[in-house]
Image 1 (tube, rainbow, N blue to C red):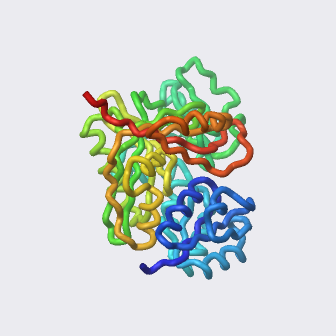
Image 2: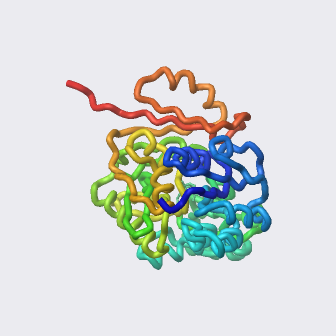
Image 3: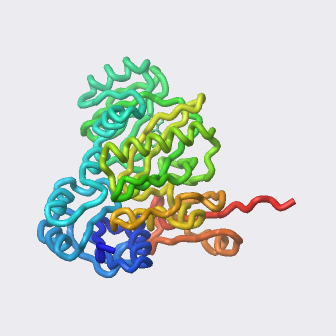
Length: 356
Ligand code: AMP
């Protein structure tokens, strides 16, 4: 084993689950996060309480770690690049650059031969009106940067939907108008690429969102083998093109004929991969730690079908009921205040086959 201390930028639940997985493999972890006693720090050996782009904190993190990773895609690219001068940073900072801007992301996916929705850059109300005309009045308007969980979006379903004032309403920042994809379901694939280029893909999950936030992931997804294979193959192409190391999550829309349209890349462990901790021997979190620490990747095969449900806000009150059910793994994130829309934890229920 070459790496002994792993730095993690970001202190949320993904960092917490990475720190727990790292600890089991005898790695120490240091979290860089401005909020003290964050969910990740509760499971880590140490926290550096500072902004993600604080030069002194970055120097301290680089000097204290053998490898640095991150748990969210809006890590300032400059911070990752500064760290990369003195310590290996995985996934490579170029993956952040690609994922942080929806136009760069789509152009990159298309260059890899992976289809996306058609799109136009929108930098003014006039751009928006021209783009909507091109899409016969239907489309999804999104902020190019910093959008998450459906925030910063407006859907136009037909030419009757007036775009009046929509550019300003989204903050007057650079936007993208995507064509409205007539999908039948949404899936995601979680894949890992190791230091030597080996790829391990988990089975695609079928995702249902509620108010823009992931509600459930069901495995297996109700898709054909060909569609599942296309998702895996897209992940392999993308990982190779980025010379990637670590876990990635890729979200897709499934069209009525089974073809895939890629929506988003998350260069990190992903909410729709939380089921792997209950239904696979090696979870996405351990897989990520193995990849960035130059260890062999684990087997991504699932031993059970399952459904993962996010616990959002007051859903936390249902924990005692979940705990009293068989075949359910409950995972809580250590957040004290259950605000609406806040991810408090998740549960994964294994589906055992009916016995005759
Ligand atoms: P996103 O923030 O890109 O993940 O979008 C949030 C949700 O909005 C997605 O999970 C879809 O349900 C819906 N959505 C996003 N983009 C499109 C699109 N181009 N066409 C249809 N639905 C979309």
